[in-house]
Image (cartoon, rainbow, N blue to C red; front, side):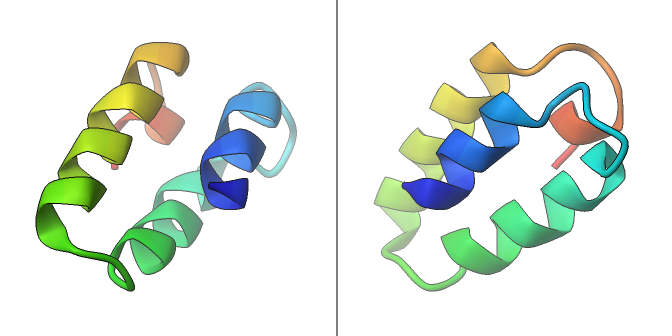
Length: 54
């Protein structure tokens, strides 16, 4: 959940291009159905751009 929070908080920051990789790595450690739900939830909070294309 900290990866999700970080993605949402830093979505406009200078390191926003690293969000998809960091979030994908975190989601790979949990059950697929849960990861899908969290990914969809996170996507709704991200603006258009690289951070949203995870």
